[in-house]
Image (tube, rainbow, N blue to C red; front, side, top):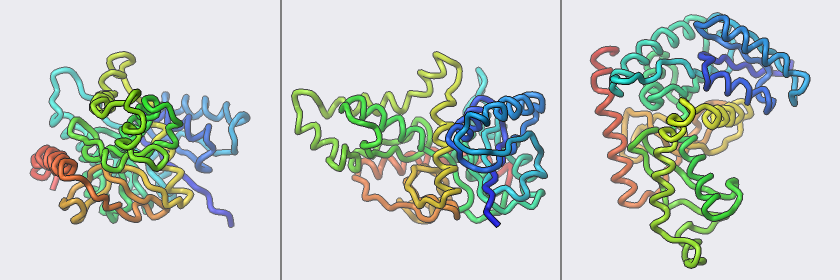
Length: 318
């Protein structure tokens, strides 16, 4: 019997509905069940998506469901959660979403689910850690979207600067998905040639100091988008579909996801954005890059920011 790839999406707001739309357009997964407290919105989304099936690259079963439908899902994608409100601190949001996630993950696990979690809700590194703790699943089967979008933004801006196809730009953003993230310039290349060497090739066009501005635009991209349209959702939705494909198709492809570290990069007991090999088992392996001394210091700082934020959560939830 042919295997059916089933995805359960929890949260059908801007990110969730954009993910469902991208999933349909790219023909990834055979079944998609949409779960949300707002039943009318999710039912409407399911109806709307089904009406696009005649134009889709592959047939798919899409419906509004509930947590019982998670039992035989291969992948749970969580985009649900509260957004930061004026006057709220980052810690306020962490605690609020951790409580929300406790209810979500407990409900999913009560169905008998034994697949993979993919978390996108912010702060994604911390909520991925909470999902791992709440679920009791092996750490390789709990993945956060991490810095996959930041990495995509970096590749795009470098491609624009050097005037090459972004698919031929290879560079990573590592660390927290947030203000303490870092660009890994020591491993950034254009078609296999270091960005620094590419700058030396054409000093009349490119300057090393321009890289700093490119990173600042990557780091602050969400703020600029939110200021203009209120939220970011298309880019992360496509990143989530890319990870869904990597998992369901057993690709063994490398992505900068939020992965659990057990000694790599000098860190323990933390989920943070790092390049990792992703396949049907979840995270097969965390890549061990040789970072520069500056990058190592920046990564350590980013990890410390996350650990400090998580201290009150341990007291409240574990």
